[in-house]
Image 1: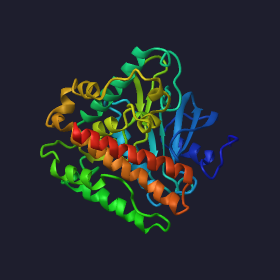
Image 2: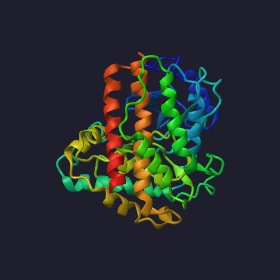
Image 3: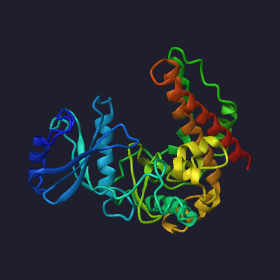
Image 4: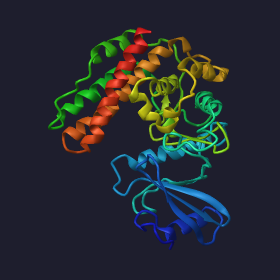
Length: 353
């Protein structure tokens, strides 16, 4: 049993038997180390039988939907294995939660990359041309995902695309209203909320084509190659579904580093370093791939960007509400509330433009 890993989280005896049963290379576990990052899930890297693996499972205290989310992640990664979408390659998954202490888990290939919202190494830090290409490649990687035929990939029942856009504003407005049930939360104080919601309903695109959505596409969920500006992998597929992929592009624009402080906070060192392409250049880079744009109206990208600001602002306001109720850190809640206000200012700017 490798040291340093709690056997309640990863029981290596159980893991060895499970891997052996799937014909994976045997032998002792070597170079076992936990991985850290922006996720609450447990990630452990190891070598066995000459192969490198990363195990992913839910946190110590599993939430109601944790195992189902892991099953969905494993499914979408399996579907992407035979595409050119930069994503971790799934090796094997265990959807049966009775095998490992109640937790679903899967094994994937390690990613040779870094998170530019956490650190910015050389040559990326000192070369603005590299950083510009990093930005363009974020859009190109997303276009690769938008090009996937979800039906052919076996994801025809992975989401509910019928009426997807029509239900979004009402669904997220209800989410915001639900926060008022938390004791201590005074209710949302978001200037211009009603105006943004009304504009989104009045200007919703009427033509769109379903596809695979990441659901939380921004720089913090990308790993970049240490050697240059290529996207090594899109990570954290917890919110993936079948919907309108242009929402992902809007999400990228909504979180893109700009002149306002709030947007730079989301992008960390890469946002602070600058040299990134402008939003319209991201849209142009996405459009380089015809399969990503066929049947999709890029002229409506303002709607998607404003909607992404709307939705993400509501999601972040949830942490502020929980902080007011004593269920999250006050400093984190205050920070995320400030980002929410910044996102709604950005939504107004998108609408005005």
